[in-house]
Length: 258
Ligand code: DAK
Image (cartoon, rainbow, N blue to C red; front, top):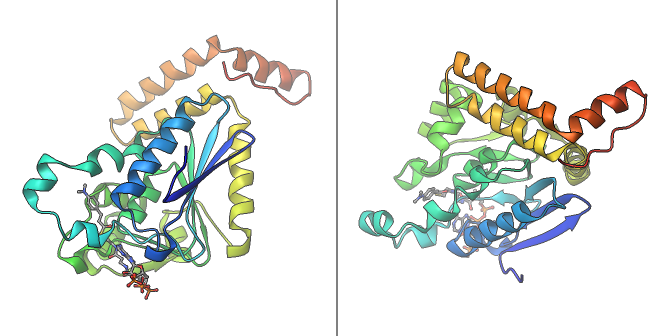
């Protein structure tokens, strides 16, 4: 499929989606989020893909929703015809592992989409923020919910109420990003991480992701019970037999993703 606002490629078992609207710092216009959704749907159906990387340019992962498009909307149009609802959460709904590689600005919806990914690896140049309050609105794609879970209430309030940006070092200290690397190394480090994830058993990786995400939805007792049942179910996988046999035989495991 030919895309206009993103670039999509496959490297081995890793799918890479690059947001590509340089003229607007990858602002998330309707066309871009629709294309992103379609690309993710393609990777979800592709048995050859075990992990996806979502990235932008050196200058911007994404500077937020397209303000010029948003300007034309009113409450009723957002309520009755909300293209965002269908497309924006497609990253959060994606069931395979997905890593955000963030360089430059990740603001507003850009920060929210990065937070929908399973983890964020940032370059030293990354800048995160929820500046919607400067536009007379608040975050609307999960920022008020995912940010406090990621960085604490204090930091989320600070960012959402002042609209200030935080740099990569502060984001790592706060727990928003898993690693910070020099800008020139970002894609090498992220691709290595993605290839490592993609080489694991895909059903186990998917269950791991689902179970960790469940911890944000349910209480500890329910979560532990869910974990135990999912763990037990993994003993019906060929990959469990293979993984444990490989350890006992002192060889590398070759997972078949079933
Ligand atoms: N939208 C549209 N265009 C943008 C943009 C954006 N978010 N960000 C940058 N651009 C455009 C600029 O207008 C400029 O275009 P031209 O003027 O050259 O045509 C070009 O990108 C380069 O930007 P700058 O000239 O401003 O570049 P600087 O390096 O000087 O500044 C900046 C970079 C990132 C600090 C600045 O561009 C900036 O402050 N951008 C806006 C950041 C922002 O406020 N982001 C939050 C957007 S609101 C929803 C759910 C969620 C949302 C919406 C709806 N629903 C469920 C309904 C999310 C909302 C948001 O994200």
